[in-house]
Length: 140
Image (cartoon, rainbow, N blue to C red; front, side):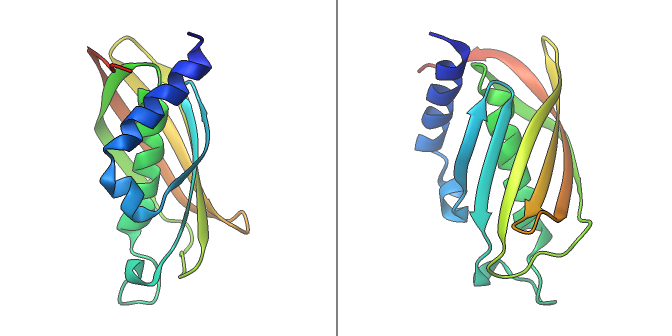
C-alpha cells in the first residue's frame, strides 16, 4: 500500500472513534503523509463572554490537525508539548482552516507547525506541537 493510501486509511480509522472532532464539526479537507488541512465553522455555543470564540476551540482545531498530521504514517503519536498564539479574534459563523505541516520527523519525536486562518485568510492561530512517536502501529 502506498503512503498516501495508508495515511487516508489511518485517518478514517482515527475518525471512527473521535467523538470530540465530530462534535466540533471538523471536516478533513486534505491528508498527506505528515500533513493535514481541516475546516470548521464557529457556532454560538463556542463563544465566550467577550463575544469572541473561546480560545480553546481554536486550540482544539489546531490540536486535531496536529493529531491527523503526526499519526498518519502508521505509528501512534501523542502530544508532548503544544502552544498557541492568537493574533486575531474569531467570531460566530467564521469558518476556520487549520493547516498542519511537519517540520521534523525523527524516530521518536516529531515537530509540527499549524496555522489557523479564517475565511478571509487572516491568521487567528499560530500553533506549534511536539509529539512522541510510539512504537505501536495502527491496525488498519
